[in-house]
Image (cartoon, rainbow, N blue to C red):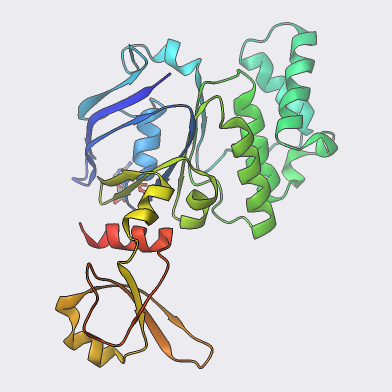
Length: 290
Ligand code: ADP
């Protein structure tokens, strides 16, 4: 099973180039689409959900051109947009039953089975009689996943699902995604490196509409072995050395000194320590190389 994105370009009517010749393949497993706000993540996801069309390029689900076979493809698709509708004062199980009718599951018995199953997968059994309008942010996101699972999609696309969730809700949500990610193609977007590090077998970094990297989180950090350093030198001293290295991030140490983390291929000629590379380092470096 494969979703193949080939040379997708999109320029909106206002002239914004939201995607520029984006190509990559998705296979079953968790795939993270990482990029800052405005990078083009939602544009790509709406395109993959066939809700908008590219100016150029094609997308194939196995051998199927998704834009020429929208109806067939959409039966295999589950899409959770960033803003997930309004929440009526209906119970979770009542609402899921209603969605199941809309999705064409005619038998009452079949609906009861699938509704039970998706409540179990999303860990919402205990809340099934509660009104969805009373749910917390994390429960609403899990409910969003429950409704998209009703027709057993093979391709699941989730736009920035962890935005605004507190840490406990975020973990619970990511665990739900993990549980559905083994057999299906699951693509989710985020601006949080931690989401990708914890969850994904593969990831892509996009910014300004361009695909900057596609790599596994493990390979990404391995690439940087021996090339990430930290120094407590003053900002002025660093400015003078700028040619030598690429600054990645800053932090304060226990003595309240500003520590700068930077990338350099070889050992720099300043006082510094080699440190263990992190996925954040790869992300910041990739964004700088535009
Ligand atoms: P992200 O999801 O990474 O934040 P988006 O895909 O939402 O990025 O946006 C990419 C760029 O396209 C941004 O500059 C945004 O303002 C612009 N954009 C998004 N949707 C539209 C639209 N419907 N019309 C015009 N510009 C848009």
